[in-house]
Image (cartoon, rainbow, N blue to C red; front, side, top):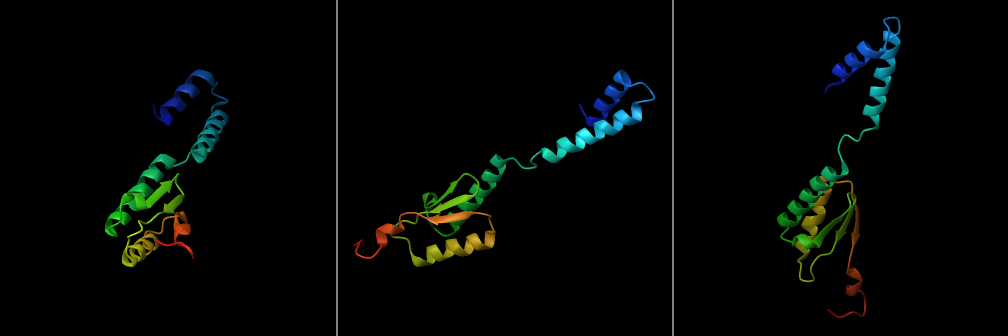
Length: 119
């Protein structure tokens, strides 16, 4: 049922003719407030879009999907395999910059490659 049909129904049933303009104004204000409070894109669809972009980047850079893990909608964990080439890692960074995704990014597992650790 559309907003207009609901408005007509309410006006016809509950408002005397002298109060109709005031009721219409109140209904319009309520509808505007409800429309402003709604999130135009639910977080599930944002996550789906960003996840698809992350998987495309991993595939384009010849890395497994497990190398890039999206947590929620804003956090990206980068865990490259130990045998990944520098070119693949550079490709991921270039693609992420080009995609301009609003993500917080962190490196996972890089402490294993610190000084004194032999790999």
